[in-house]
Every structure is written in C-alpha cells, then in structure tokens.
Image (cartoon, rainbow, N blue to C red; front, side, top):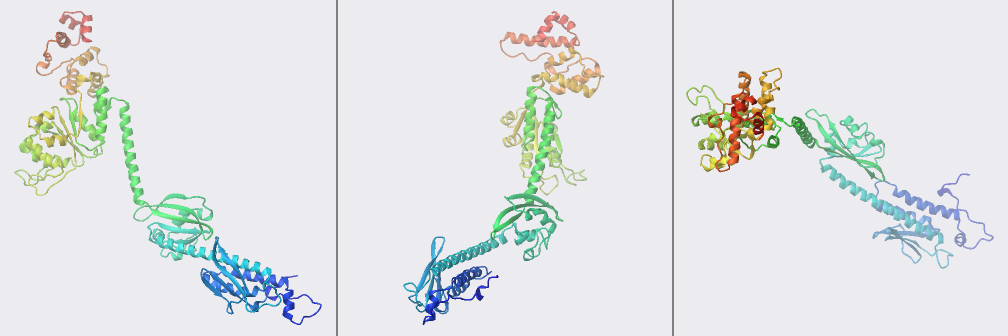
Length: 605
C-alpha cells in the first residue's frame, strides 16, 4: 500500500475511553508518533533542499529555514523560532520571546557560531515541567547540525568563488595560455589561449568539446590534448609541440596538471610560447654538432699522429705544436709564430686559419720584408679612383681582402715603426681610410704574424713599438728547427718524393742516402730539405748547398772542452767525406783514412 505524502497524512489520534472536557489536553497527552516523525523529516528535508539552490545567499537560506521550524513542533500554531548566526538574527513573523524556550547551539569546526531557539507563545497544556517533547529536543539538535552543514557549504562556495575570481584575474593577465577542462569540455580559457589558437571569443569556448572545439584551430587544440580529456591524468605531464604558421614555425610547451574543480577531477593546462628559446636551443645544437663534426675530423686527422693540414711530423716536438694549433684555432686572439727560416711558419698559420671559425674567409698573406714604406698605405688600405695618376678604379687593400678572414704578416719584424703605428690604428678598431677616400672603413680580421727574429730584441732596440708588440702576440707558437726533430726526416722525405713522383716507388730511398739526410744539420730547415731532394731527383746525386761557412763546418764553440770540439770536427769531416763519395761509406772511410767499422762508429755518435 503506497505511503501517503507528508502533507496528506491523516492526523489520527488513539481512541479514548472518555472524552475530556478540554480537547487540547487530550491531544497533547497522546501525540500521533507517525505524524510527528513526518513533520520532523519535512523540516530537515526542507532545510537540506534550501542549500541546493544555486546562486542564493546564506541570508536567504536562513530566513526560509527559520520559517520551516515551527511546523515541526507539536503545537505549530503556538510556536515561533529564531536562528542567530554570526551575529545576525533570522526570526519567524510571529516571533516573540517568552519563558517557554528551547535552545541548542550551532557548532562549525569546533566553534560556536550561532544558536537555534524555539518559543511557545502561550503555555502548552498538560506538559508539566517541560513544555517540549524529548523528540523535539533531538530534532532541534538535528536542525542545528543541518544548519552547520549549510553554513559550511556556503562558506566553501564563497571561498571557491573568490578563489576562482582571483584566478580568473590572474590568468587574464599572464602571457601563457590557460585552459580548464572537465568531462572533456572547456570550463575556462584565458585571452592568451584565444590569441594562441586564433579564437575570437573566450566565452564561446565554454562547454565546448575538447576534441571538437567550436572555434579557432581545432585540430591543433585536439592534438595538444590527445586522449587526456577522456581519462583521469594521474600526474603532471609536459610536452613540446611545433605548430605551423604562415610566417614561421611556432614552438609551444604545454603542461597538463590534474586538479580538483568543484569536487570533481579536472585538467588544468598551460601553453607557453617557447619559440625564441627553441630557436636558440636549435642554433646551439647546430653549433655543437658543427663543433663535434669538426672535432671528429680533427681527431681523425690526428689518429695518424703525423699530419695536421700541410704540416708533417710525428716527433714529440711536432705533437706539441699540433696541440697549440688546435688551441689557437679555438680562439680569435692574435697569434705570433716564431721559427727559423724554412721551418714552416706559413703552413702553421694556414692550419690555424683552416681550423678556426674564420675558415670561410680569405687567408691573406703579406710579405712584410718586401713592403716599401711609401706604398704601405696603398697596399694595406687600398685607394679610390683618381687618388693618383693611373688610379683608374677603386682598388681594395689587404685589410679589405682579409675582412672576415685572416691577415698573415710574414716577417713582421721588418715593418718600420711608422708602418706599425698606421697598422695598429686599424687593428685596434679605429678604422682606416683608403688613399683618396673620405670615409672611415672597418675590417674584421684576425692577425697572425710570423718572425724568425726575437721581437723582444726589436722592442729593446727601438725598432718595434711596445703597443704593437703586445697587440700582435697574444698567443705564441714556437716551431722547432728540423735538426731538433730528425726523426721526422724520413717522413718528410717520403712525402716530398711522392709529390715529385721520380720513381715507381718513391718511398724506396737507398739507406746510404737516408743516412746522409738524417746526419745533416739542415740550416735551411724543411725548405732546404725539399730543395735538396729536388736536386737529387733531377741530378741523380745528393748535393748540399748551404751558404757560407756553415757548409764547411759549424762554428767551434768557444771554450776549452777538447772532447766536444773534437767530436764536432769529426762529425763535420765525416759528413764531408760522405758528400764527396756520394754516400759510399767504403770510399768515405778511405778518404778519412779509417776503417769502415770506425766510420760506422763515428756516424752513430
């Protein structure tokens, strides 16, 4: 049998053996339990329903809640109620303070925040010491608990609204795109998100599906979310995506963070434009890759441990030179190369240029020893058309040609002090002016100088300016003479003979010839070695043409060390005998008047 609705439940009373004179006394003595219970439930249910109304104030709920309370009491027509909450009073229309009062406190998070009072306007009949039922006391406490929950919900709602408003103001000011998604739909997007995905209105995106956005670049938006809008994201996830734009690629970093929004799981996503950062990163990666490739090439060229560019040598002295070349190539500092004539200073300068960042520019070599002072400005700075007789067109100078590359000053010690002053001004960045020109020009180049003389001695003698001296030699490389690295001679011989191609197998050099080449002191260094080999290939015999007394004998050291002087003299005579005999050791021993074994012994000293 269906239960009747609360407002239609008959208010039945138990039959009495005798009708009392006052009917109110009879009803009060035996209230209908079912009817009273229904009234209580109606009251609590009505208060709960009030809190479910959207966008209503706490005052609106409290005022309607207090009107529901008297109807739940035994004598509703004789009852009135009051709710005191946070200092504010909410009362029924007929409210009056009397001596028949029932009270309970409203507690929220352990704090006393208010009271609920029920008054009878007149004394109820037949209630003895207490005019209220025990059930009404329990009901009043239940009402207070329900009001406490309503208060907590409204305070939480207000706090959430305040937080949402602060967050909205914040997100509208930030440069990053922000989107809030719940149940695969957009709850909020900020202006930066709209600008990023070309959305005309943020409001139109609300409640739009993530996989089918109503506006903007929907395919891009859907690709950023993937399947995240359809599942619960457990932890923070970050990705970088590239977007295609008409003018240039756009790189976006997206961060998806799981949050709770209005008590349910949601996804908060931020979209940051990192195009500039990505371009810098890609440029750095390209540079690192280029350096890595260059380093791989350099290391592979050094695996043989005997060659770097056009320089040959496996001796420890040359290995040290190779390391200095690579270190110098890694910087843009001015470099000074020192070494005897013919030791390969220009080859070192070219190797530095080829392995540095300026390798794409020109390598301009200038022989300072052949430079006339009267032509210095014309050669270095160039001239304009009509600057002098015969100047029919503009002509660039060495500095113009070396722009973006390397200017190699060979025999820099031969520059006069006046030349040094003019060149120093251009090197220091003050620029230069071509002959016949009026505008100052600038050139970006690296200075590499070479000299076979000690520049410090030139400064002491007043032949070189101190400022020019310090400017051109920030880094120094000292080349060893060939006589200090004789273990490299067989390698050099093989290389030069391969270049000349005189024989089917140019590497097969008679042992006696190689012995002579190793024993010789090579005052002209590698250049002299190549010339000697060229004559050997052309004439068929070995001939040394060192100038002056160096061919006859090295200067005998001043002193009284007889043993060293005799050894040096014997070494010279052995070399002379080998030259005259064409490398025939037997004939050389005969010329010296010693045995062949003695000759071998003296050659090994």
